[in-house]
Length: 537
Image (cartoon, rainbow, N blue to C red; front, side, top):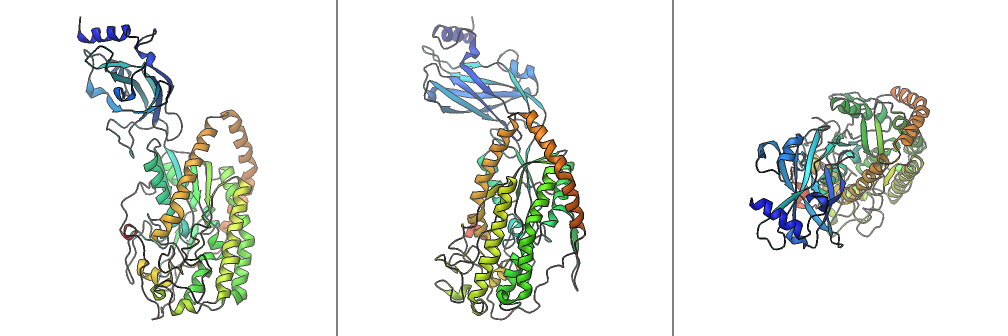
């Protein structure tokens, strides 16, 4: 009689195995099933053993026989299967929850083969322990289970300059040098708040296999979500045209044989209202006293009155699946306030830090209190009010970042989250980063709240998918039909809009502007590593 057979008999005599066989120790199985899931769980009956005396692993393969034979010393072939260690959580009732994450691109774990989506994978739980009265380790295993590897969980990232990362290029370059971006036309950066949040989501949740596509673009208006963004060249410049952001996502999905975006992460509306252009014009003195300029006031009024229609058009495109793909949940981010000092007061000509000339020089001091009040009350507060109303109306998951920069606006010269003109010139070599977050600002203002909402939205989406699928399918079909006509009309209207001019900075920057890099954390001044954004893969 072999030693292994003797150990099994000892285990049975000791009562460690249940009456139905060795696998009675495992129950409550949960296989990977939802989009992005790579995690399986099971409940282990400890049979009185302390948790630190038990080890659980998983044997897996795309061949059923390979897993079954792995527990037979005469038949096993390690080349045909993989193994990985599970984690154990003490449930305090004589049982433990075993968790195992199957390896994938972003989480190789202990190694083992990574299986493509839709592959049928077979696996078994294995418990190693020393039975009472024995000196050798005994391994018992569950029955072989199987699941089909779920598709990736897909996040599409859309939006304007505050989403793209304007103000925080991948690497600081200085005046007169070309900044380094993921997309030079759109000033798309890996230091943006959304990218930081998605990367944190992936590292915090290795059980989710996530792919994301980033089509954000500085200067984007709401119409550019649903129709082409065309910008003619000015003298000495080259124009460009990009497909609608929804169309770019559609193309990426087609290349990857996908038809669903699980989470649409976005912002938008600032350029329709003139938040960026009006604010930058104020800070660069392209025209004085914007609060008294009838043309500026009309632009802002018209923009505020029109964004509701823009949000309505985007919702219709989503609900109608106009671009040929479905959206699970929408996560919409509003805008942070860039206009406060270190004490939470509105910026003024008198603002500045301990060394005010680090950022608040002669140019900033000529901006009137009335202009700062106009920017805050009319543009910033008015825009966020429209965003918040749209999110409530359409059931979007809102990320409210409006107060996360309350003491760190661009006139806090000691710890700014936003760029003045001089800082934008020093960081990215042009004025377009003015009044946009710097790298520290994107990290502090956006990363954590966006990450937390992505967590919540993904769980809500998983709950919806595991609910009454038939009822949901009928509701989606009904909403799709009702929204299609509205979506067609909105896209047609947007396609007839005049092209926007390419941004052209003022030819002469006043000598009074100091090219000062803001005081940011050293890690934010370094170039960022390659991310797993699949936009161009």
